[in-house]
Amino acid sequence: MLSKKLPLATAAAVAALFALPALAQVKVGVVTSSTGPTALVGIPQKNTVPLLPKKIGDLTVEYISLDDASDSTNSVTAFKKLITEQNVDALIGPSGSPNAMGVIQFAAEAGVPMLAPVGTAAVVLPMNDQKKWVFKTTQNDDIIARALVDHMAKTGIKTVGFIGLNDPYGENWYKVFSGLANEKGIKIAANERYLRFDSSVTGQALKILAAKPDAVLVAAPGAASVLPQTTLFDQGYKGKFYQTHGAALPDFLKLGGKKVEGTVLAASLMLVLPEMPDSNPSKKVATDYIAAYEKLNGSKPATFGANVYDAGLLLEKAVPLAEKAGKPGTKEFRSALRDALEQTKELVGTQGVYNMSAADHSGFDDRGRELITVKDGNWTLVK
Image (tube, rainbow, N blue to C red; front, side, top):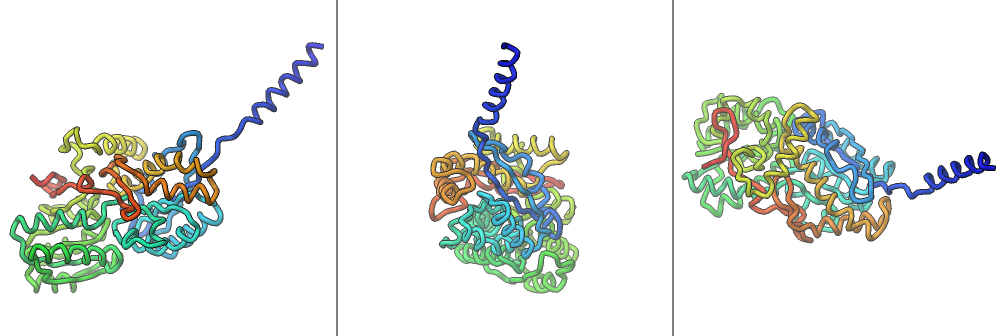
């Protein structure tokens, strides 16, 4: 009799095991430009995905990572695929500002929160019914530009030559920078544009040289930030160079070499972490991220990867709140996730502290940037 009961008990135990509720799963789509002209931005972002939280509370998190090859049309295709085929609850990406501007409508129409690791503030400003679904994980242009303009004014810069990308990144930077410069009595002596895949900017550089500005500001992310500066250097320009936070990557130093020595930019504390005091709230988070990235990939990350890491931190805090409104995979969950992201307060990230609101979907304040220069081929704080 006992021998007959044992199989029944075993079967019951197995049945009970399979009857246990499975962990609900959150799906997050990630689109990066890990190939193409924006690859220096996209590669550290793609490489950061394995470091994002795989479990939040009782929920498992799955990340579906796609490459748009730096192409805006591919970004749209990838977003649509993630939304319609994968039924994702949140989206991280794309890497480029033009790419991000082109997919906002699809995230909004589907009601899926989008965490954009891009430079231009145009993805969240001016706020409207579509952009309310977007949250930006980089510093807004005005925070960075104000630090640069203040430095220019302090060091006696009176005229500036501007050269930026002919896309939303460059356009918004000119809009913000020119307004702040005007307030300080700094004149824009030249205003030039180029494309991120251009191999020459000689014509634009010659026009800037002819204007004889005291300084030049280059507004471009990744490898595209190097070309105008090295071209002007080769043409004999002797004034001061400024860059946006788009140049905050190791390859800027590697590609520019001695031609970028003395450059001033405002960017993440990650570039000068050893110089930051332990009291800085982001130092430990940034240190832990860099160590984990280096262990996984064998190299240090550019700050662009940290923008994706911070997206994971934002989701980690917001998902438990959203879960109260509905299960992952539902409209109710995604709407609540958007609301929870908007209510983020004093969340310490790798590059600053996030305080979101209905009007501000970036959330950084001055704790989100440091004034930095290139000295002896390395980044160092401006003293």
